[in-house]
Length: 592
Image (cartoon, rainbow, N blue to C red; front, side):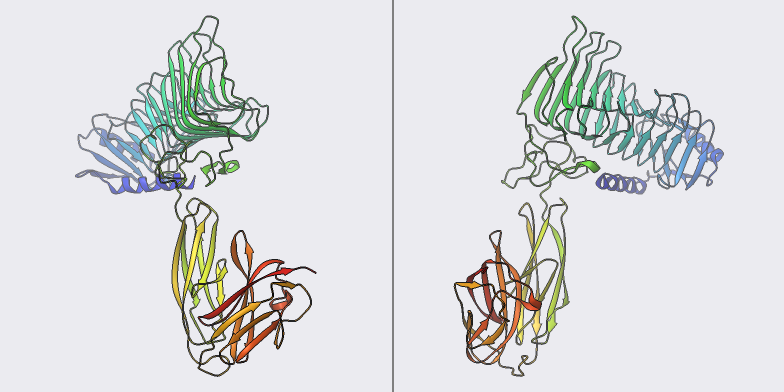
């Protein structure tokens, strides 16, 4: 939901900046309901396009506020939905009819009416970045009425009954969040449209969408049924004998209960013989338990027509009951969609989701529910297809920054580098390091001790679980003589190890004899580092500083590293290094 709110906020900021050329700005006295209505009346009487600035504050009126001048467009601009509040206890808190170019933005609109009146009535124009709420007890009431081709966008709607009613002339709901007993209800001819919206049914028996008349198109939208008994994602149930058509494209529903009457999509022809058609395309209807039906068809009245159900590319849980429909089902899929966090209503796809690149038809225009681009090459095969459901997996590479904590050090003294990685897809990210082309560690912090003067390239690679990676480089510099006091660098000429070393109690120490051996050009300090084999990679396990003599050296070693830490049994590699000069050997560490 963070992405939806961000998109709405950006849209609000852009709309505030785009003031109509030559518009008269009408300021409202802070907190004065009478002055607000006076400014609305003044703008309605003007043929020009006006802007009404409503500062932060509470504006309460028992009669609500209204603007009814379709031929005189106006923009009503609040300070933000959390700051400018219009409220009423009887009529609509705001009834707005300013023609197709009229707009209200950045307001909170609330009503506690006991009647069926909505808190917000949009007869034309657009509502942007609003917070609309209704707490009245009338079950037929709605928080917002959208009709006459109007649009409610980027808004948060809450209601104890219906969230949004799409009325005569149709309307559009986009890029918002609706929490209500019925998220979106339409019982007029429409056409209606719901795009990029999160619907959250609020009680048992609730529905994300209830369509009872006309045509409704729903795209890039999700319904969180979670643990609500008898809740339905999308319900098509004709009332009054008018034909009904519900078109679902790239939608997601998710339920969590067993044996409680939940359904992702319900097609119920009812008793009046009305024609009912439901199409579901490139969508996900999933639940964590097998009993909720992803699709449920009910039988028509005796002699009435069966509902027409067409499914194409639907990933759904087992248990669909489609026998009462005239149904077709193309390319069904029954695998866990692997949502990122379904219990917290996060239905984005993770990198292993079977829904990635499985769309059969071109995606609807515009972004996915979170505002991110559609039709990406999510599985990395070189071809881009839309994903199933409301969200598109982006397969973005990770982003990270590399920062030297101390990029220079005296020979024999450690230097540190750190990196912070993130991933827009929330994929796990691994960080690995190399110094001078040799493995030097993993994780957010890397420590490396130069054994002599010089400079070494430091490279950090961030790779996410999908295989996408980025790299950054820096330089580590060591100046001055080595730890033995000589400025002449030590060169490691060769290294060897016993093929099999048994774990024991021997203290690591350089001596004349030992299972790890090397030859160095002159006396001086070297670093003996160990790597172990893990998931097909050599992973740093630890290191031991040592001072050797010119010529042959050996290390008594039986599996113990610095501070007594044990090197795990199995395939291992040892590297003896002094600055950029190094040699390696492999061995197997075996338990006694």
